[in-house]
Length: 117
Image (tube, rainbow, N blue to C red):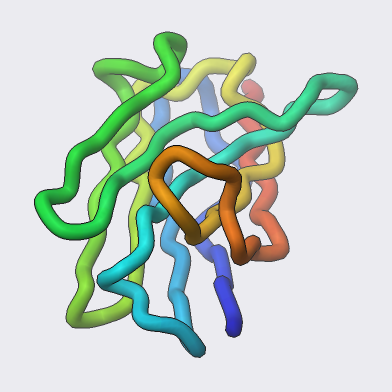
């Protein structure tokens, strides 16, 4: 099983980034996919999630209206479009795969997002 994140980097406040997470080794379409983030000195938090099947989405309040999670089951990939980025969005972003209501079964290695002028 592999989850490989990409798309992180340094961006100015107000800018945008699109994270991708390519999955392999399991039945991607059957798993809920989630993006977590962990800022320095803080606990990991769930930023966004998308279910399998009808693709229900949910977001932490701090990113609602700015981040959009989506998935392409044909490409075994989940995305996180991040707009209007703020310095407080700076974190390592991890993707996870697993049940909708539980912690992920599988984790990626993380990608750094830094929002700074």
